[in-house]
Amino acid sequence: MTSLYPSLIRLVERAIQSHVEGYSSAIFPGHDEEWPRLGRHFSLQKDGSPIIIYPWFGVYDTAFGPIIYIGFNGQQGWCQPVYETAIANGLSEGRSYKMPYKDILRNELCFPLKDESLEWLKTAESEEKHEEIVLIFFAEVVNCIGQYLI
Image (spheres, rainbow, N blue to C red):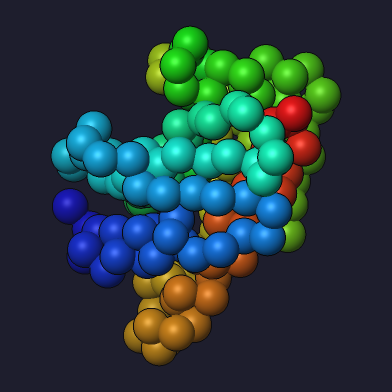
């Protein structure tokens, strides 16, 4: 397990509980996972929309190093209302995330944090800088996927 895990989970929780204008989000109780995949499920709703989805935000420890991402599961009851539409519309790379990809094994649409931001998180920079990186990443992904929450 990487030393990034404990501090990252606190940052993930702060991001989920932060306010992204036009949306509400909250940590979804339970369903915590353990190494090699650690993070939090959360509820996400666009203001004025009756649709609520339940994405996942955290870190997956791979043989190549950790991947920090936000995942949207395509199964009914999780993120199905946005999953197929987002994939069909051809997503592109963002300022803080790499090209989203479909994880066939998990049936997830994944938005991975860009490598250069991940490198900043691994440094001894201040926690405020780390929090800023995670908050920007979270807000950008929420705004991207939020266009499909109608």
